[in-house]
Image (cartoon, rainbow, N blue to C red; front, side):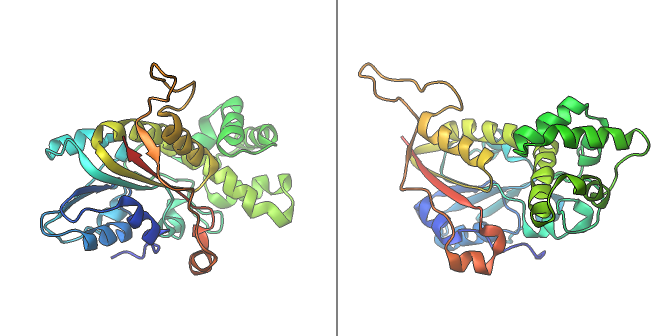
Length: 299
């Protein structure tokens, strides 16, 4: 198995699924397979687990188990592929939206601010759009929007102006080039933190992460059986707000539908409160520090 990270909040997420041994479950973000293995440990011979991952490296970690099926696709196609496998509804869905340690630690993937590599950031290496294309072809206003909305950076306009000025003379092709270019715009003590936000915004755009998340959540309503569990682990506020709002209101904006008595007519009911990693887990895996776990039950 490729050296992927230990799955974040594994015990809490497995408990949140309330697994029935003979049930059918989906891990929509397979990665290194840590969560999937934990789910399989809870299933009997009649249980089934389907997993999704679009990353060719992750597919090398497929689990040899007759109860397990790994689907090489983005989880925005959840419903279509489950129907192909004659699974109209399932008992639980687990989603861990984070970038794996393996992806961060592989320089040629271009996800990390702390290693030299091409500006790539594609989860699916076969798609045409990568971070280099975004940085070198998007207009100044588009770049400003990305870094303001997806990166939540207050100086997005200055960053976009600097990038557009430099690329007039030569393309920005590597992580180091982008780091060097934007270094003057952030104090040294928070430089890597702010550059992580710059990279996050590019990654979200390249992989259309928020659109994928919305599509997945909408499909989960149809895919989950009544009383089925939805378990989501988010790592930044943009993702977590979408998940929280969807669980609460059944939609992403506007007011939820109500019945004749004014009660919310929503598909999910929150189970418990927000769960975050313990200090011990953060010490063991520093990348778990920003994780937020929410659990919901299909009504």
